[in-house]
Length: 276
Image (cartoon, rainbow, N blue to C red):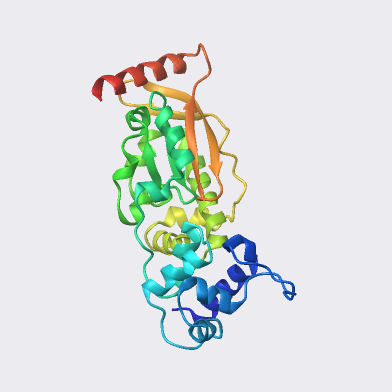
C-alpha cells in the first residue's frame, strides 16, 4: 500500500468531479469545485471518518470491497480503477472481454470480420482479433503473464521477429520501446514499470534501445511489411482508431488497391473464411 499516492489519487479524482456529475445538488453555499469528502464517503457507503483517514494517510489497509466502492463512487475508468487497487495494495480485478472493450469498439470489430483488424491496449496487449488478423499475425490473445505485451515478447522470444523482414526488425523494436516509454512516464510504478524492470533483467538489446530515450519513432501510419508462411511478404498500412476512455485502439490493416499485397490480402481473407 502506498498511503501518500493513494491519498493524492483519491483527492485529485474527488476534486475533478462536480456534484452534478454524480447526481448531487450543487447547493447555494458551495464555494470550491469538486466533491466534498463526506459526499464521496456517502456515495461509497462508508463513514466520513473512515474516508477522511484514507485521505489523511491514516488508518488500516482498505479492503478490495472498499476500493471497488470508491472506484464506483468516483466514476473511475477501468485503468483508473486498476491503478487505485494497486495503490491500495491489492491486485486489480480481472477484466472480461465485455468490460475491457467498449461497446462501440466491439460493434466495430464485429462489423470488420472480413478484414484484418484487432483491438490493442496502450501497452500492446491484444484483446480481440478478427479471423483474418489471426491468419496474418497468429493468435495474439492466447498469451498470459508479461508475454501478453508485444514489447516483452519481442525482446524475449524470437518468434515475433519472424513476422518482419530482417531489415525492419531494428525499427520495430525501437517503435515498441518508444511506446512503452510513453506509458512508463505516466505510470512508472504500475505494469509499464514491471515490464521495463523485467526486460532490463533479461535483454541486453532492450537495455541498449531503452538507453536511447527515443520517444518519437514514426510507426502508426508508416508502411509495414509482414512475412506470411504461405503468401510471402505483404506490404500493409495500419490505421488506428483510438478510444481514449479505454486506453486502447482498433487497428485495421489495408493494402494499396491494385497492388500485389492487395491481392495477397484478399487471398488471406478467403483462407481465413475457409478455415473458420
